Amino acid sequence: MRQARGQFLPSLSLSRTWQKSERTEYDYENPVTLAISDYKEKSKYKDYGASSDFYLFRGLSDFGSLRAARYDLRAAEASEAYSRQQVIEAVAAAYIGLLRSERLLDVAVQSEDLAVREFEKSETYHRIGSAARSDVLSAKVRQEQTRLEVIRARNAVEQAFANLAHAMNRPLADRFDVDRSLLEHDDQVGDLDALFAEAVANRQDLHSRQYNVEARGGDVTAAAGGLLPQVRLFARYSRTTNESRFIFGAAEGMSVSYGYTVNWNIFDRFTTLAGRSQAKARQRIAEYNLDQAQLDAQLEVRQLYNSQVEARERLTLSRETIANAEEQLRLAQERFKVGAGTMLDQITAQVNLATAQSDEVQAICDFRIASFQLDRAVGRPLEGLTR
Image 1 (cartoon, rainbow, N blue to C red):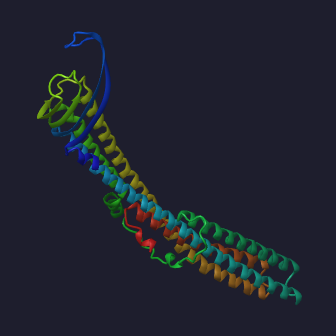
Image 2 (image 1 turned 30 degrees about the vertical axis):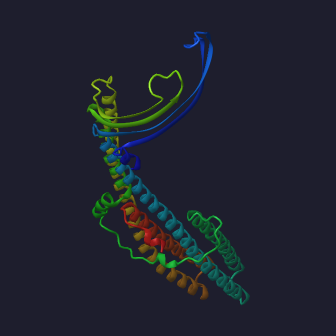
């Protein structure tokens, strides 16, 4: 922008020259004695001056360059804003990933506690003769499985924290507390057509491409500037001093000049026409890229919308499944107490309950991540997540 604006200002340059020389004249005839000999002459020369040029008209190329620079700046600002949204989205996704891992760890710990209690019950029943040794062994295997799942869940939490710290550009960050309220949400899904319109109107990357189209239009104007005449104003000032006996005229002098020049390049071997055609081609490419970006944005919104709807339905199903799994576990425990069921029935019910609880956590987190991604995809500000 500074360079484009500078084209409308006059140029100014200062110069200073100092020179010392030694000149030898061969077979020099002395005008007084008429003697002929070689003669050496030492001289000094110095000058200083100033000059200024100002293009009064340059075929509208300056205006085209200014327009291109202005929209290139806006495109860069829009791209920076969209990159910022992408960074926030990545941090939010890593944050949700950490919350997901912590919630899954809670599920694993609950499953382990339940398995430990069931193992203790099976040992008690075995001692009083109400349970077989195989039931005790099955409960022991289930307990060890849940213990391994807890270890894996803890490792997943540590890895998720490392991913979050990396997304925040803090790979060596100390452990910090996280707020789980980010998972509290409503499961409302917006209207798809309204989301399409919002994306086209608000996405910064689309704005950047639109500004790029306008900037390339400025390039077309600038490239066509050579088809019109150029008018240039100029002014010159110089002062010279020459200390030499061989100089003709005064040893000191000053000159001042000013005027204008008009130049119109009638034929430049099609260089300007070719440059204008190339600029128009770049403008058309920018327009095609804008159209493609809008289609890609609509496709992305559709995909994220589908993911959000699917996650909502999975969440509803998982909650119903949890209620059913809890009832099935209660019935399996009652049947085992009265000898009408087996330990395998209880273990199956425990696994089903843990799976349903894990599915609920996954659905909640997937819905939240899809919501953040959809907000970014339709151009909604995500700065609120940083507070």
